[in-house]
Image 1 (cartoon, rainbow, N blue to C red):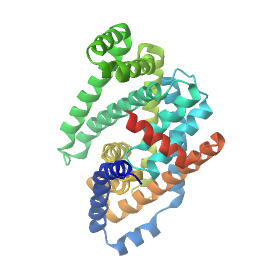
Image 2 (image 1 turned 90 degrees about the vertical axis):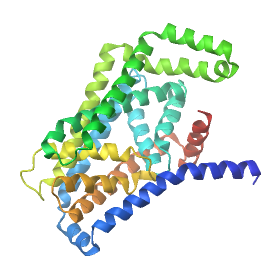
Image 3 (image 1 turned 30 degrees about the vertical axis):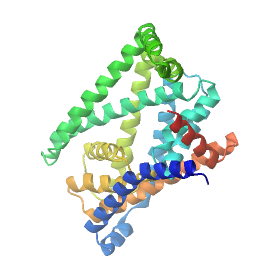
Image 4 (image 1 turned 180 degrees about the vertical axis):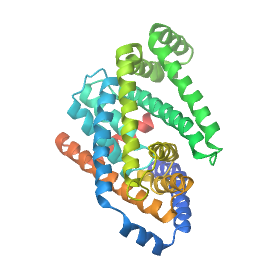
Length: 338
C-alpha cells in the first residue's frame, strides 16, 4: 500500500468519524433513558400487525418517491428502473457512511440514461429541497399543537423554510435564465482555467437537471408527489400509535415524521443508526409517550424499513448485474471527483 493510498484512507476515516461519534452519543443517550427490562416488556406489548401495516405504507412511500423523482427527470427513465435505483440508494445509505446513496443514485441513473451523474444529481438536490420545505412546513403546523414544549423548533423551522425556499428560488432563476448562467460561467472560465476545465462542463449538466423547474406542469406534478410522500409518511408513523394510544390525533404522526426527518439529516453512521431511534424517542417523549415504548417502536420501524429497502435494493442490483462493492467504489470515486 503506497503512502498516498494510506493518506487517502486516513482522510476518509476522518470524514467518517464525526457521524459515527454522533451515532454513538445518540445510542448512549437513548439506552441511558431506558432500562433493559422496560425495553423487553415494551417489545412484548407491540402489536406487530400495525408494524406490518406501517411497512405497507413504506412500500407506498417508495413507489410515490420513485414517481416524483422520475417526474423531475422529465419521465425519461422507466418507472421500474427509477424505483429500483431509489432503493439501491437507500441500501447504500444503510450500509455505507457519508450519504453514499445520493451519489450512488446519480451514478447509476447517470449511466442508465447517458446523462452523467451531475445532471441526475441536480434533480436529487431539487427533491431534497422539496423535502426540507415540507419538513419545515409540517414543523410550523404542528408546533402550536405541542403546547410550546419545543420552543427550539420554531426558529429551526423558520430558518429551514427561508434557506430552502431561497435555494429553490435560486435554482428556479437559474433554470429560467440558463443563457445568463452559462455566459457567467464562461466569463469566469476565461479568468480561471480551473473553472473552465472542471466547473463549466458540470454547470451545463446541472442546468440540464434543473430543466424541470422551468416547466410549470412538471414542477407542480413533482411537488404534488413529494407532498403525497410526506402524507403517506405521516400515516406510516401514525398507525403504530393506534394500539398504544387509541384516539391519538393524526398530527402526532406529522410531528414524529418531521422531527425524524430533521434528526436523520444530521451526519451519522450508516442507516442513521442511533439518530433514528433518538429522534423517535425524543418526539414521542414530547408527546407524552413512555421512553421504553418509543424506543421499541423506533427499533422495530427502523429494522422493518431497513429490510424493505434492502430487499428492493438487492433486487435492483441483481437485475442490473451490478455488485454492491463495485457500486460503492464508483460512488466513492464520483464523490472524490466533485
